[in-house]
Image 1: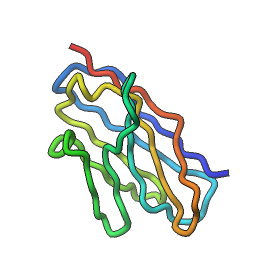
Image 2: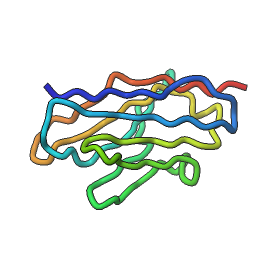
Image 3: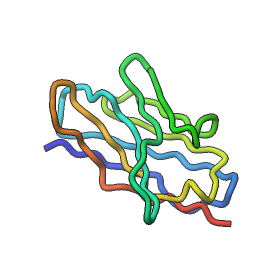
Image 4: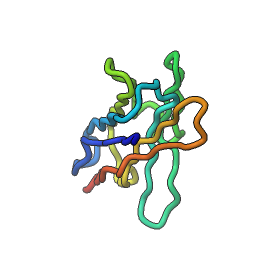
Amino acid sequence: QVQLVESGGGWVQPGGSLRLSCEASGTVAEMNPMGWYRQAPGKQRELVARVRSGGRTNYAESVKGRFTISRGNLMNTVYLQMNSLKVEDTAVYYCNARIPGWAEEFWGQGTQVTVYS
């Protein structure tokens, strides 16, 4: 059973930083792409950042220049470094991944990020 486990959420003041981590288990296949989504109260889930094999990345416009997604040295790990956090970044952040050739996509349980002033 494939599972994604996130960690690293928490509370931070505007301008602060947090680093989210996601580790997959239950598969020996390389997951591609891996990414982060977020969902704020009353809003739809949205893509924050995604990384594909070869290091290609894409980001939501609202986080460009502030957030950095990267894959870890261990297979099927992904990180999201979040700097210059804003109140509007407050949301539950979800790790997302696919296995090439599989129709199913996988989600973590979510980790809360709260930016308070």
